[in-house]
Amino acid sequence: MPDILTKEKMKDIRFISLGLSVIISLFIANQYGLSVFSVYAQGNTNPLGNALSHLFGNVTKPEYTVSLDGKQIFPNNTLKQNIVDKYQPSSYDIRDLKYNLRGFNVTAHDIKIHANPSRIDITKTRVDIPLMLANNVTVTNGLLNLNYNKVDLGSVYGIYDKTTDKMIVHIPLAVASRYLHL
Image 1 (spheres, rainbow, N blue to C red):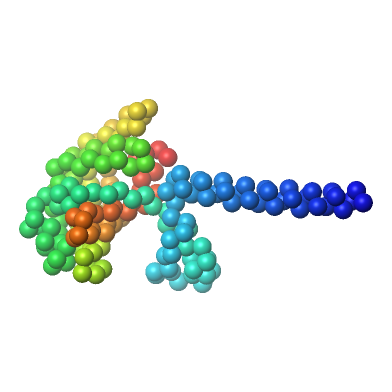
Image 2 (spheres, rainbow, N blue to C red):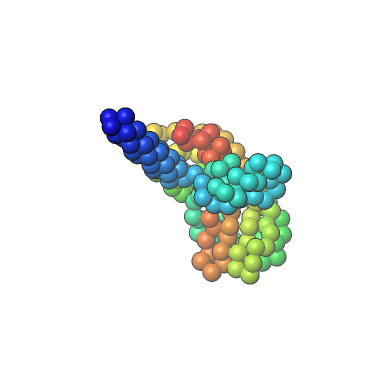
């Protein structure tokens, strides 16, 4: 009889341990903004990667997102219309950009951007930003005060929504961690 109780207790312990592991994993994914449950299979030619992507979502491209007003990312309406209505690739400059990323206040100056837009639907435009160079960037969070002369945030992309005049900018974790020391 003692062996059966021991086996039952071991099953309970394993079950509790598995449950805690799942909860801790979800907490970490949530804390660090990992897109564990979003499906991403575009361009994936790895059969195992495709299978995992369909089962678990995007575990290979974690990213952060930042919401910016249209006036922050487009310096004038003509340029904005060329990008979000006419889908014309454009290179332009932004004088200043301020945003908060995961508790870090980021301020950048003299930003050079190259934008490659493509239509998603009638209200949304994807804007690939292969080139985004900024000068005099400060990153602070109360404890840290980091300064960079030049920052390269190339390979980010944004989804602009005409109805809200906002762009959700997607910043790969690998790019953000170069400057945020995550």
